[in-house]
Amino acid sequence: MSADTTTASAAWPASARQDTRLAGDLAMWLIIGIEMLTFGLMFIVFSFARMREPSVFHAGQATLDLHLGAANTALLLTGSWCAARGVQALRGGTARRGARWLWGAAGFGVGFLLLKSLEYRAKVRAGYDLDTDTFWTFYYLLTGFHFMHVLAAVLLLSGIAWLAPRRGWKGGNTHAPETVTAFWHMVDLLWVVLFPLVYVLR
Image: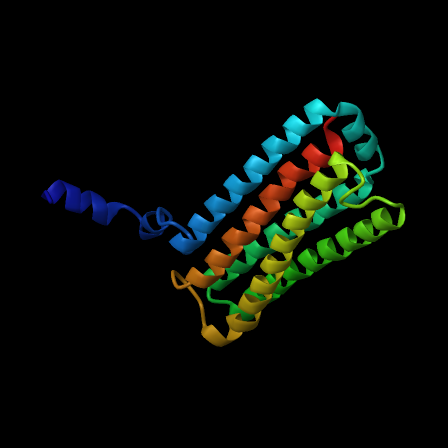
């Protein structure tokens, strides 16, 4: 390595060099990639099925509550904001504050699960189930699969929030919280695509 290169590296701010690293665990990013691919394929199949049976899908979508879907979107987006603030607080060495933000993110996830459960109950009582038609089959498969991911993310966030004051994560030693937060952001992103695809687009 030349003297110029060494000097340039030393002059480069440490925080900027640290920001170039991959946040979270590589294995989690591989899982995220696989999950994104799986959902992407399901979205494509859903779109083709809608092209084949537009009237069936239009009738099914007309029964969905856009207000509930929008509320769930707001819950997940706010949860992502809380999770990001939690990791930021942990990096700053304020473990209890970070834990509170992470508990908040988990709480918004629980809110999503409760609203979605109420929606499922209303649809089942109205006579819509997996066997009703193609739209409802896809509706329950897509949203149910996502529901399970939200549940997993809530459990992971809760675990990290509980451990935060006990593990002393700070500075660059926030690997575990970053890993869990990356998974939460994936769940959030999937809903941002799923909501307009299933609820809005005709």
